[in-house]
Figure 1 (cartoon, rainbow, N blue to C red):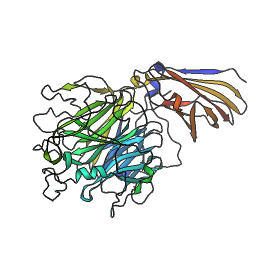
Figure 2 (cartoon, rainbow, N blue to C red):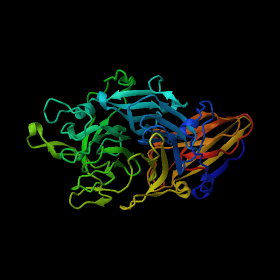
Figure 3 (cartoon, rainbow, N blue to C red):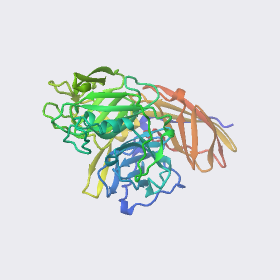
Figure 4 (cartoon, rainbow, N blue to C red):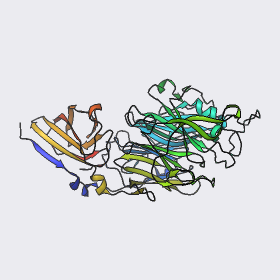
Length: 501
């Protein structure tokens, strides 16, 4: 066997390699279908990306698949999928409901989003098999990539006849109906049970809230949590002509956080595992007694406490209703009159934590029927006045280091050890290393990671026991490979989309 060859890819050597060209996404009229036989790209997180121009309403949310290298955009009646290089991979269309915020289950590659049909009083979580979105123009009702789960709890609050006149007023904000002012659901995110920073992630959905300034019972954001591990039994195809009502009868938790009334509630909900914090992006409210911030946060580890829902009458109008209350994080700007804390930060059409203190922020623009979205990579600053700042390639490079050692080679094979280290300031809850092999090289078997190969691209995902890496911590995995010619150094190595070697 040949003597070991070691290549150390430390943070300082990565900055120049991270400067990737960004291809602007094509408009819908010029888009070409993705090729599901093409070799997947290995690219680092782009500093910016444009989500194309679409004949829809504005962008509602984004989801990022860091392990596979894709970004999903919700444009209300269309889902668009791009790779990290800005190429359009596919779209899902053919529905008229309101597709809102998105989040990704990284293990399965499935995208979850809020989907509403107010006229039918049908409120769903849409579940999209992102790995199968490979063509432009896929039909949500005719293909197998799109399914829905009905949420009875949302319906019951939305359709509540609160004034007892025997008539529900429907999709009207200026009314006493709709419990808590519920206008359906918008925000969607995976994260731990409230009060914990560990455990299996739960799907959390946030209510939309009508901006009725005459009411006192609509000053809380309402958040529901669900264990989706058995949701396949509820999933049904989308059928707009006959909306189904199959879904979990109970929630796994219902919570309230008092922010003051907002215009249509939490538009974007996002759990940041690095800071162990939930972020809530909203449209600005207009009640003068509140500060009406644009973004709020809740620390995951702060336990909910049962208490009075201020302004919400109790049963039969007696006293005050009680519920599980979440406390706003002790951070950001503070309103001395109400004690409400938050930020003057636009986060209502796309907020996606990426780890290590990095986020994607989306902004919307464009005329009616020609909407677009611009995505920018930012880092958390902790500044109450300006919580985010533009990220740089150098900052991305400082989040990790990789040692790739070929221990030995023989005529038709080789053995390799890969050592990964978190050199950033935030912990990571999971990692996927990706690289491009040389011609004729394949994975035989691996240890310490689940390694899978697609063409010449290999993705090695952490095992359960080495997924979490504290700052400064390292782990090791390895593999035996086969080759038809000779062993080459890997190209374009990334770790969760951050390091490019």
